[in-house]
Image (cartoon, rainbow, N blue to C red; front, side, top):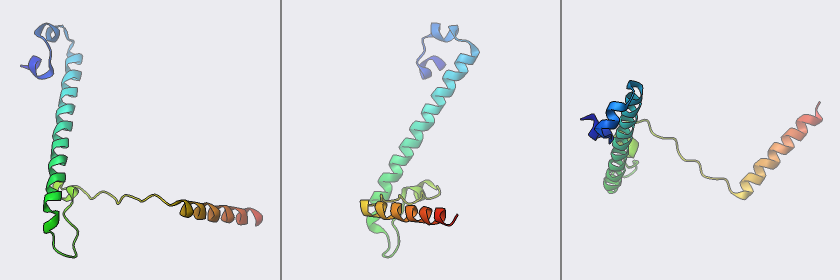
Length: 103
């Protein structure tokens, strides 16, 4: 039974040490859990897109995290424009320059 699940021939199975068998079974279990989580996320993503047109006005559409019962992910930060980066750099530079002049 185990041979078919993890892809071992019976001769390979019987030549394994107990610790090697445990590692193979742990890897198989991890792969199965990862595949299940991926299927759940794919289904939740599709469901959130299918339900999006039917949400009430003024409310956020249901998210994949809500469907899966997880804490919402933090909002993705947008990248700063070149001007914003330059402005932040100059402000930090001037602040450091002022603090060094006060010493």
